[in-house]
Length: 273
Image 1 (cartoon, rainbow, N blue to C red):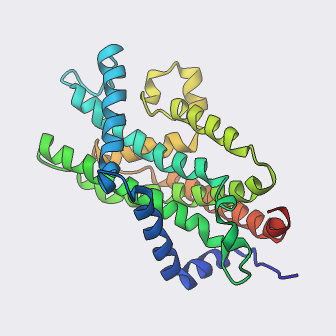
Image 2: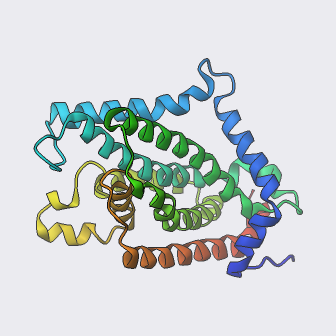
């Protein structure tokens, strides 16, 4: 029986060996998602904007919510701050929610012995990253139009996302493999990502909570990434380097654990499918 390496370096090696194939599959995924639709790829712009408008209306108009950054805070300020949280949570949720069917929807690849199944999470993440990049462009353009400038700390945003990138890949590998054996795992991930939406400081600042709850929320890694993303993209504040390093190490370990689980369990995929 073929043995699959679980060494951490195999993650990088597999990505580099198959980079052209990954790029091709990501392109096919992105194009295929909008093929046949009237507006086509324009939905990548419209989807986040429509969700932003909906959430902004509900929280800033219906509930009259404010972020509390200053007395001159407008609904547009609230919308931009909210948008960053939705973007960061969105990339994680999109990847995790479709991970359970990643192998099930690519049975033809499983039966091809030479196909590197371990690259499929890269394809899923690459597709989600495309949508995220469009949302970031919309966000930056909005800030330029409204405030006529961007914080210089925006350059740190890609680095801030690194822990989330590794952790998300780890979860995709783990859930994709688990989904082969437990078919209702998708229902669980959908519930968990919805819970995370409301417990990751997407709609409110952590400081708005009572002190006893702030401690627990700060243990949520996604809340940290969202907070640091806002500091970088909006508030012109430098990242918390020490905490970022801790999160990066945790993200790398999650990626390795998920990859190792995937490599260990993939031997049985063909038998189950």
